[in-house]
Image (cartoon, rainbow, N blue to C red; front, side, top):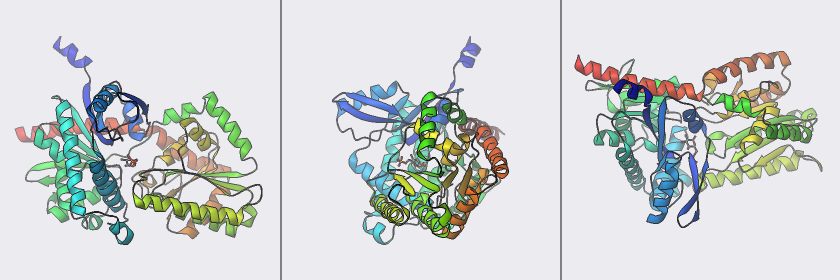
Length: 489
Ligand code: G6P
């Protein structure tokens, strides 16, 4: 009976991320409404059938009172989620401050705060203290729910201090950590005052994963140069203990997008959009409204294209969906006004009484409208200045099997490593080059579009999010076994 039980029971996977995959809204003193947010990580793990996944994270709301916390914990339990409650001050210092004003820009090569950003940065040390405290709070909740044999998978730059805290609770815990952003050149990481603490903590994990080989290489260099440790082909060695470091490029749940195109509601949207933009080629950008996405640069490149190609002015439209994000961070507020100003100027310059070249929306679209937009687009513009991977490029490709549109893709997005052969790669800082690529994409012959699309479509449908998650977790299981074997020998 023991064997049968073993086969039946799935291994438990504790997924720890700053944000839970549901957003919670309070509708009464002790009642909550929950909405699943189907981001990349969520759909990746929904597709992984051999583990029983539980989520641990922040629900994105401040719940100061106990009855509220109790009710939310109960509601979340049905969705296999466990909340970590962070008070407003911690959120301000840890999430707005250390995560989003320090680590995020640094990892995307925007450097540490200077000038304006420095003036709005409260003491670096107190933000780092709040960061460590928040990570300790996550660790405490993980430890309360941990059972022997579980795998703990920590995610992203918010939780770099977590592997160390977890191993202090229990050195036998299987801990993996994955970074969803780039890991920058070791010369950039070196500028961070808490560079040593963060590297050491991440190395406490058993397996450390990145989207690309380059990010993994940068991390190993940081460990050798800053910590003086030895980099081996398997990872980083510290006094006989090896932390395995490797690249695991994420993907999407491509079937979900492909199937969505058959849904009647999506078909209705497709028909509407086609009528709305009849006679014009559609160019599309979908980004969180973030500095790293290069939205102003993209729009300026579009302006340059219109300037130099008067024959296209009434034949093309750029739809830019800019999803608001981290709106409490001053840098993001400034970016919003900057983008609005540029869009207004260009529409004033090239618009007519009946049309204007840029449709800019400051909001997200529902899934059906988004799929329909992807499907009718002629050219997608993914021109991030830096991006860990960028899954918008993958989603676009998944929805383009009948249209075979062109993807213009930044060489500084992780996705350039996988979709580079099918896309038109650009340096997003070079506005002249991006403007030229827009012309090339709009005029590309069908045969070449087909060839490029085929390449990307095969990649996106084979290297799915499910494959990513399964590969990481099974490697984590194996890594532990290997480490134990080494000790026994
Ligand atoms: C990036 C990060 C994620 C983060 C997401 C949305 O993709 O890698 O960890 O959750 O942006 O940002 P937010 O700050 O709203 O969670």
